[in-house]
Amino acid sequence: MKNRILLGGVLAGVLAIAAAAGVWYFVIRSDSPPPVSLEAALDAASATPAAGSSSTSNSGATTTSDASGNLEGTWTLVGGGSSFAGYRVQEELVGIGSTVAVGRTTAVTGTLEYNGTQITKVEVTADLSKLASDKPMRDGQLRNQAIEYAKFPTATFALTSPISIAEEPDAGETVKQTAKGNLTLHGVTKAIEMEVEGVIKDGKLVVIGSTVILFADYNISQPSGASVLSIDNKGTMELQLIFQHA
Image 1: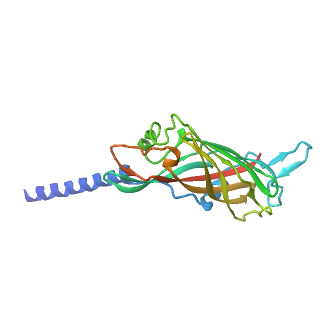
Image 2: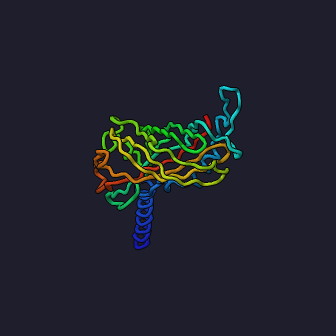
Image 3: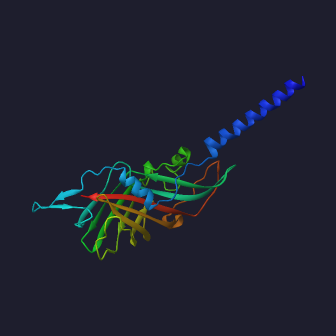
């Protein structure tokens, strides 16, 4: 009888541990990616084939985007999901505590223009209805709460001040600059500044950037839910953009 009680206790303990592990794996555990980094962006660029790194001008001459220069012209975002726009927000969840919510969309389009001394134009548009995090329930709430992508399905960034690049960078050389532009989010347009880093690698222009935004500036209300205790009043917008010569 004692052996049966002991065996039952052991089994109950094993089941409790298994249940706790299941809760941790499926509910508490976070698969949120780390912040954007140039190293990760370069890895993504290496794994993404370009649609073609050369273009022909009206005169018939071919320009290339390689280490020897000739970087002038229009650049467009490479497809295949290597570019993304997203958010990072601190949140407090019932029974879990503090965690960082990270959502990203790879449904982004954009162009960049360089005249040999300045980046004169950058326009990026992100489809917010395609934002995905490690919690599908969170993603669904954003349809009608917070960014309300059902009403405001896109966000855009447009450069308002040229970025000076006095000399064309060598392949692999990191360039750090501050990009000034207008961010349109949740139907509101505000001027922002974003710290960006860029590298030319294998004929691609790899750019990352991030900036903190206050939700109140864009009339974004904090989402509510049964498992949400609180959401920070600000978040980080982050970008990973991989361009190729148009």
